Length: 244
Ligand code: SAH
Ligand code: DHB
Ligand code: MG
Image (cartoon, rainbow, N blue to C red; front, side, top):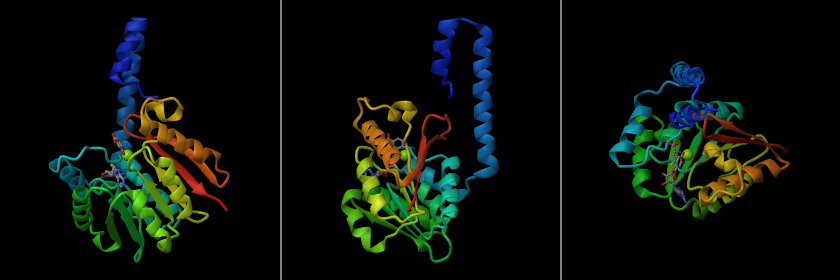
């Protein structure tokens, strides 16, 4: 588990042991080094990905896109299931969508659902800059209103869930309807520093994600795992593969 500087201070207070504290700080530096090196080696960002983040900032959108390592993981999963059709729920500025769309073969398609028309406009520009404008489509609206309209376009090979958190269990139900055996369902923010792994959190969003995790685990047609994989190993995807 990652030790934040706040935790380090807490430990300092508890043990007052200088050697322990030095070790914790060295471990933290080592973890940061590992993440930045893996990112540089396996998941470098090009101009289009960096521009997606910059345009989000310019438009006063929150910087809550996935990490480069998560983006590369989405590409890896898309390749693993030979994805031709991908569905994204919640697009922000198009950062995760670029990673996904770039994993598509010629003729492949990414459909992105986004509630904010302002965000959707930024996403379309990001996709165009990244050279994936031709294989992507952004639909504006509340995901729960748009999902029923996708049944004629199913099955999707990969579904990525990253919108508002309270309806995550409902997004899972739709993802199951819109996929096939062998499809992969990925959801972001499934750990939340451990809070989304416990049932009694104050936050409605965190409770939604906890229920999502529980539903995934209890579904006999899914083989799944939550993976801590953000920059601090505090949050990450729950990945689920649909079985027959
Ligand atoms: N996947 C993005 C980050 C998404 S942030 C990335 O990693 O790059 C969450 C996005 O979900 C925001 O753009 C927000 O506007 C959108 N959103 C929130 N509630 C939604 C809803 N009910 N339906 C569709 N999109 C929603
Ligand atoms: C939030 C949403 C996300 O999808 C995320 O990755 C991080 C934070 C949020 O709503 O705060
Ligand atoms: Mg997220």
